[in-house]
Image (tube, rainbow, N blue to C red):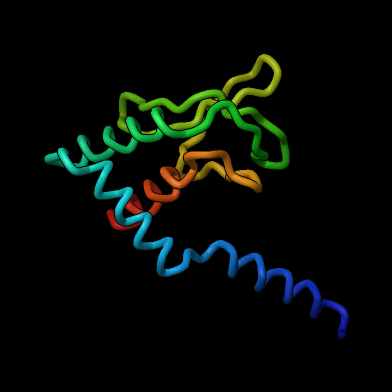
Length: 124
């Protein structure tokens, strides 16, 4: 194998893992429907996702943000209606948009709600 070919193969494999299967897409669509079922507008839909994340995401969990290990302590909904993950490292605390939060491998239980929210937000 040529130098670099292994790197390309690993990248293709990594990309393949991130692309949801057709069954996964249907499951995410069902989760989206569950989160927004009683919502009349985008604000209420976002609140529905926040509620599902708050109830189902197994917290705390560790992940890496910009090369630094952090603990995701909780999720919050800001005054501007952005869902954020409250990340802690030592005595420092920072809110990171849940849409930008890298998930660890394996992801925490309930992380499918983050993926469903990302899918929903991508349609906006």
